[in-house]
Image (cartoon, rainbow, N blue to C red; front, side):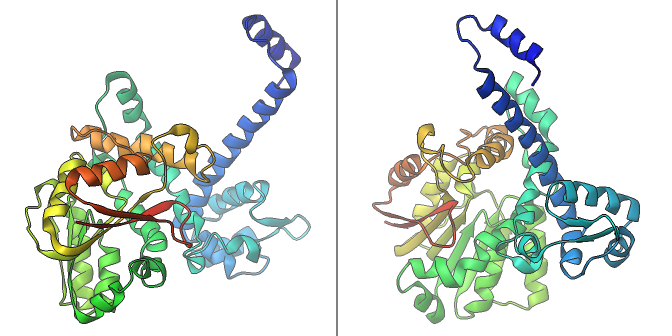
Length: 368
């Protein structure tokens, strides 16, 4: 930041003098934010095109060799590599004109690195950026943005949940409830409300053939995808239905009900929780995964991914709920409010767990 700029700031801030050193440091931070946001977008492209996966299998290579190996246009690959090199993600040999993705970086950027592949999560930045015009309009006029406006949302969510939920089901999530794996082995009825593409249920149906699984989601697109997978995998113990969770009218039907980051998006989250209460058998378990946060903003400041989560919440979770006439709880609705709403739905036994594999979510073990 120039001296002239700082002088102007001081003239405009007679009641709050500007500390030039602090201001300059903040300007530098803003530049870093711009660079990081740009890199997030480019890493998303690297993930979607397979460039990161390809480079992880190559030694030092030219842009032409990398493009040929990935089956992509060299000119675009070369420009992408420019962002990766200046962003300190890829190393460059200026003498030989070769590029290499260090193994230490590839360990967090490739599909083979899952569940630690952060390139998957980078996709959320361009995804929510695509609806910015609609979100800006909401700032002026209220309302929301419907699910249909978010291209690739379910695809990206399926990839992300494959890392945070599906990969952890057998090792972390199911063991959080003592005896649950044994029940699944013997055979119980299970529902996933707001199941998306149904990746968690598909994995469970394969692991526990004696149990029967049912998935519900509002999106016909995701249910069609899930049912296609059922046929491809030849699973006979699982069904998927396109249905609004607020319209599910089952009673004492399920031994186990899951929701994975689904309640806070709902147009009628209170009704959904009441429906889950009614659908659960008297001795059943409701296992809810949702964002670890507090209703008190000051308690969220030090959460590792708080800015990202508030950004996704503003641009998606809050907007889709408001678009459907909902309360717009948002992803950061908070553990305190979640517990209050569970109690209001009728649940009396609520245990909140934090699991070793997941810094971002709470796992609620809930019974009647």
